[in-house]
Image (cartoon, rainbow over all chains, first blue to last red; front, side, top):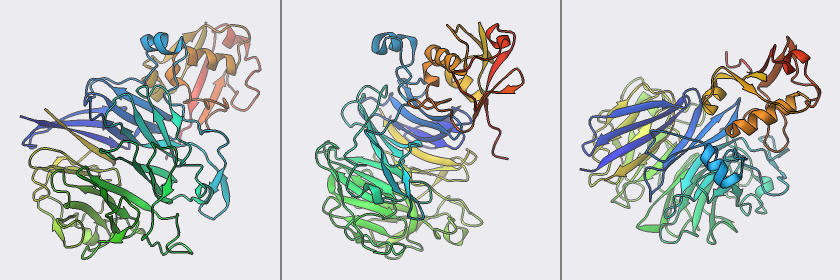
Length: 388
Length: 98
């Protein structure tokens, strides 16, 4: 029987939860990297035992960790004695070196003043769909890096940051972060990234050149509501069967595109709030999508103190609340943008984690929910691997 | 041998104990101690000082012999007691967060 492995990043470490296909009885391992903020962990599609992790700290900066045994043991790539001899002579220690290409230049601060681009942390790690040694990193201040040697060294794909609009990008409340990387499974040279608060950008040439793809987005906090960049996109998602169709949870508004992000239109419809962070797509139903409405950007709590996932089976609009097994009173947590995932079992499982430390699983597409654990540290990210 | 203590989380990262001993060639200074430390434990690169500029990270301080060496010239010789291994060189993470 197939099984699943859930990778949970929290503000105080990482946890690995495994269960069989029923997804009822969970084994929890961890904490790994106790005391460190684990922004994101993600496994490689072609080698599920290889997992990359972003470990970060306000004191000690960025560390990249890698496991080659499904999360049992971890190392900083390129720093073991053996790897140092083979790859670097006796150097090593380059796996946490993220240096912008050329002169970093400046972008806008919240007040509109110019501030220099400064690397702070890795928000998102996206392994290649075909090569476990190739992995992309989305970082704050917003830029995209790539490693082709298993995370030992990193180079910036600077065509993104040096786009003509780059000097006008501004941070969202969480910083100016590149938090989402989508790779087109039909053409790996085509990728989308999302930056708060700049918007969505697409490359069709493997990351050399990028174009803002934000037409149709409206942000009423900007002087020009429909500007080319400046939109606080919280998350984008797609289904591999139709990579022209993308879904977006924006700061406000749930959006959809049917032409590879060239144009967007709103599908918020009957949601109790169209503010939120994560959005994801059912593994086998390309038109079934999930969001977690949050009351507002000022309060960051579920409406009415009820933690509800909303599902649309029509690719947006016609939303239904999914509540069975979720707290329906006095719930004041948030669900962050990286903290939702889906598995690929026949009955698709949906997962999400809260800032209150709970991680929930629905083994039946959202109809019923169970807590894997309700008392993790505040959850930053949730990913799931479907294993044979 | 130079006796060096690094913060708890960096000990876990480098998989080392509370105090480590380092051989430092030439003048014993903040720079030469950190060079030796990073050479022996390369995954500490970037965690104490910037990879490129070698600037100390803001929440890190350096102490030895009851003195603060965080803001002085990092190439300046440290006290003989450090060079002789009589006193520890302390890399300290700021106590912050309430």
